[in-house]
Length: 171
Image 1 (cartoon, rainbow, N blue to C red):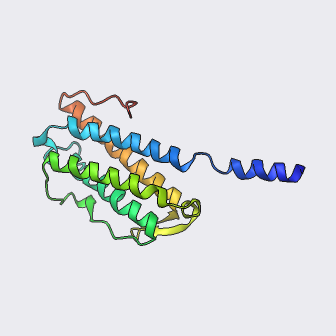
Image 2: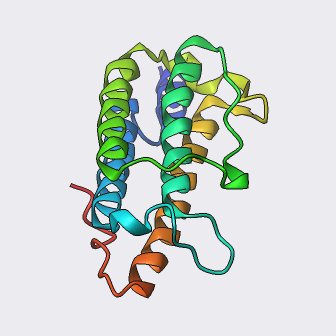
Image 3: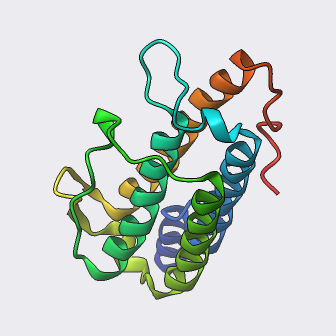
């Protein structure tokens, strides 16, 4: 009896966050990043940068591509190669189109998420032909990358004299 209790404690301790809580956390960050896209001036989305960084429009498309193709890769185990976002040579899109795509990807994530088995989170795969990690690590990378680029957008907004959304307002 004592051994079973220890095993139960050890097994439950390995999961720090439930899949549902992770999804809610990620979607909270996506809501905040969407607010940043909304706050960005249309004429500066693809034509403004600081210190040689890429435009926020290019960064937003990178975030969308990683989420869209990433959730599909997590589900299927088949990983498409991403566009080369680092060059900054991504065609400009109207802000309304980016927001529309953002919302479609959000719906896709919500639809696909329940299809991820607990075992899939722990499987090691080569995501996008570039990032070998457990799938949970790859998901954390998606989130870290989004937060990183959103922070860059905060700098851009401030240099444009625009107060960015509160960083803690993820609802």
